[in-house]
Image 1 (tube, one colour):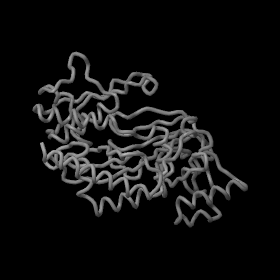
Image 2 (cartoon, helix red, strand yellow; image 1 turned 180 degrees about the horizontal axis):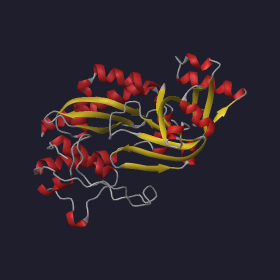
Image 3 (cartoon, helix red, strand yellow; image 1 turned 30 degrees about the vertical axis):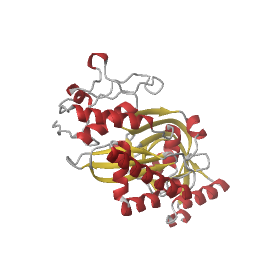
Image 4 (cartoon, helix red, strand yellow; image 1 turned 90 degrees about the vertical axis):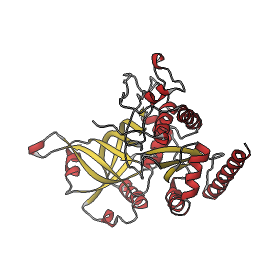
Length: 347
């Protein structure tokens, strides 16, 4: 395996991700602002270089050892100090709980995911097979589907309802992005509840005209047995079905898409200034908003020097719960950027 050389921002992104989720180097290789710091650094999404571990034993009962990657470029003291500032900033950012993040991910509009079922085809009987399917959720958060009787996954489910649904966040690109797997029992729904679920599915998939076809039926993962989650680097574990059902969908989920589209199309310079000035990174070539919630937003950045990518968190000054407050929050962030630049000029 080949390893790419890291740069200031790339190293900063990796060390920030590691520390914000509980990573600490072993005592024998403690973290100091010296050249050895680079041994515990990483680039962005494309090249890993840190040993990440989940320190919460409830989320990692098997105490998985994490990842140890070699070949890191050493960094100077100035770079190490920048890493420390970004680490501290990212560690302090408020985020959704895992249950809230998963519940919000499941509430995405026009969602598609990979459904794994057990094949009834005699040539591969009993083997797991994957299908890309549309999904929505009922009022409790249970996944619902509208399947044709001719589809192989429908035939599989009618024989054996055990299945797993792999869902990604809307702007999924790679390892730094969130995904979850819901495992449970899927069954066909009939009667009055069938009609109600068809209506719910159409709200999420307004162009799914086939929902009214006679040979399509509604299915639901009625029993959820397990929920696993990967929220990016060093964010992996699971939650219980009870935690999932009790979690609230983030109030900004319905208008994240238009806000992100506007910011990415018309306010690239602002997004860059947020991560460079407020987070404290090295110069970035681009910054794209990829997720928005009541506590802040995540930005996918590209390092100007190396082209390495990563994801950083920009918190709002205070939590927001409606669309009107989003504009005010960005105005406040821009004021913080201007104030920080003025203070720097005075030094």
